[in-house]
Length: 333
Ligand SMILES: [Zn+2]
Image 1 (cartoon, rainbow, N blue to C red):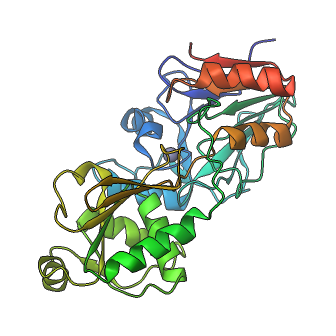
Image 2 (tube, rainbow, N blue to C red):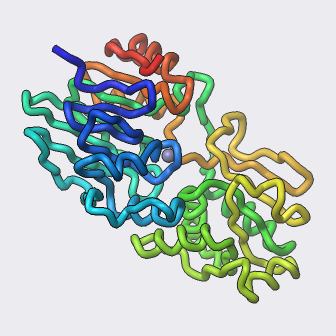
């Protein structure tokens, strides 16, 4: 029997006979986009042109429209799906299930015409994600797939982030650096903790935030850094939180207090990395223990680890086999 779940050399997660997830594949009539991060949008322009359907959640479509405005997302090939809403194609059934990662993120389940079940987790945090059950083959993300990547912190990173922002606000503006999706989560954490100062941000961050609000996240008090109010808050170093993409970290807010939120921190929940700069270990991925925990709860017959997006797929496959007794391979390798 041919394998119904593989990861191609170009990073497409191929499920059943029809589906390619998160990268272009010339043979596959269906493309699934699990979420709006760039490493999952590989070749999307070509897929929009050549696929019968490109499946994604509405929130993912809206976010992609902002982070990559030139893609023709209004073309007829885009098919929006709710979580849990099945899509039938050539005897196969495709369903997107919620993944706790960024707004709109989905896991993918394909039920084949022979009654096999194959799934792909996409990126996820184990705590807020219902595992895909009874899969013949499950493809698992492997971002933190090595036992080195454990976050065994005793403290709540969210609470720590809030108290650090509150403390620094007494001195004026606080800059927070991170990626799209995660920064909107930070905004929501701060608002829920009753931090009511204005949130200042450049245009693209502002539009991403507006989309998160339109999909139910409670942010509020958003100000453009190019507008007069935002500009004077930052110029005069008044109490506000400025949200900037990680890529601008070396250029922006150099003389203010600064916080970077990153998943690539395992030693401590918070660490000083500059004169007025701290790193806070807020992640939107499972750590190694979370990946193992997901597979243990999901109990698939066989596992494929995604070895395209990061290089820890081989280690994760070995650890899944060793710890859980489930056959596992890394692809591509
Ligand atoms: Zn992601």
